[in-house]
Image (tube, rainbow, N blue to C red; front, side, top):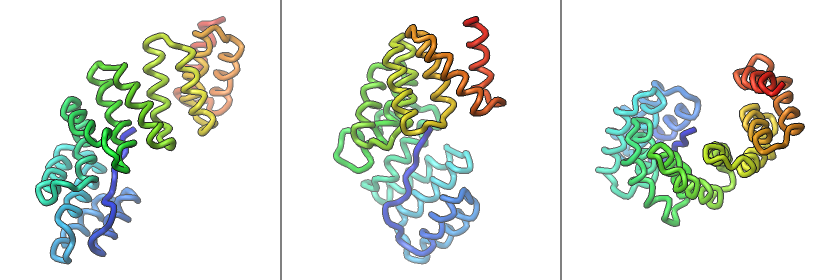
Length: 229
């Protein structure tokens, strides 16, 4: 999961309308609004930041990166553009560059530091640094307790190093906030089994199947239940 940040304040009516369209997933409409935003007195940095978000929404990370670069040329201290540029780098699999851009934000007292720490964890995991990734994901949760997605990745990192009890705790904490998540139920069930809690494992895998019998998670749950027979 990649989080993106809109400009903290919109500098024109066109920017405000483009924000509305981006939030609705209407990226073409957002880009049309932004065409005339500069002539309407909008901040060039805000315009290019929003343009980059719309382009990312369309799946064009390369074009989005160029837009974020223009935003930062107009305003080198534009916080959202700095963060969103790092997300574009992640989309382009330029993980080392993304980590380099995210670390200063994550270490700052910026309101964006929680999101930056989460994405830094993603980048470090891709770079083969799972211990550092877990450290930053845990910090992300400290900075912003609403970043529940960090718990899922923490769980997977712990699974990889065979800390199945620790993984189970992360998944269970996620389930406290999202009790309907079949993905978290599946991983919790698998972790519980590997930690020796067989009855708990079977219970949660059966919950996955009952919640959504045709889902990928239900198919995986059935595979594990058959394997354990």
